[in-house]
Image (cartoon, rainbow, N blue to C red):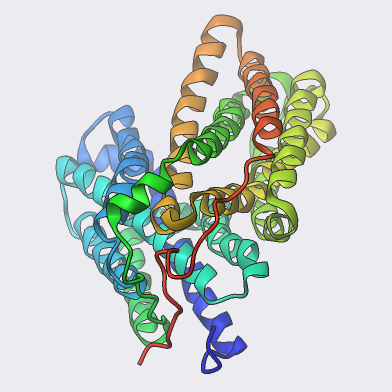
Length: 404
């Protein structure tokens, strides 16, 4: 980082990246809290409205890496600004009258540019801090999405109830527009290196050592989501918690994910491989405690907090390991953990549902614990993987320069 780039300016850039991640995360979660209203207004069944959530996830998982690959040679500032413009533009559709089919298509596009923003934000964040703080820089971007999950859903739901579901998307457009203006002023130039090539990056980004870490990332979220998707019926049936008390448990989980994602950056910097091994062990213990002792509200609450802390606490280490192991493929590889996580979320929800169909609600939690045991084994097996040597100018990203 050049001398012109002061610590205060670095904090400002990181704040913009956090806010962008938070805004996009809130837009993603809005639909979850307003499904019934959207379904009634668009005259579609609730499951069809639920497909809007799936469409966004597919956009992140598939469209994000594709857009990142297509924009490999571009300055990350240009990519971030372009992604923000596309995000605001796509959200204009549900804000101002899109029908169901157009809304569904827009959600795929919104997910894709969200995935692109994640990757470009990770590259930018790590380019403007010293190497020993890269995990904390990644954690700040990740915590934007975690905070959106914790607070964006309830706030968005209340906003939708007050001004209508379309009005909540008008608010997203407004915040996104302000974010864009600030980003134009604040974000630095982070150009690709002269020797950077998309195909060359892909060879490193999809190397077996990187794929192994993506498998681990996927397994972690299969374990989490197998249980979390059905945590409300589990609390109803096994713990006897219902009504307003449920909100306390869900809020505790949201706070735990936020704290975990922020604090996990330091652990990523001090030893990402070790953090993943300890984190998967902690996640396994939390899921096992929920299954075995979930009939006690206090134990159930602590177990749910543990799932949030250990689960999202590992997110910076996942990103750190993938980027480090990809070497020159880091700019492209930055988009891949989000794809692995979304694949894990989708498969975890399916696996938990299948377990419930076969053996009842507690089986979803048991399934999550079983997958977490597998994740521990994979974390142990991958702990000795080492990054490739990176020669000067081969990282795919040049030093940042302040925006004019």
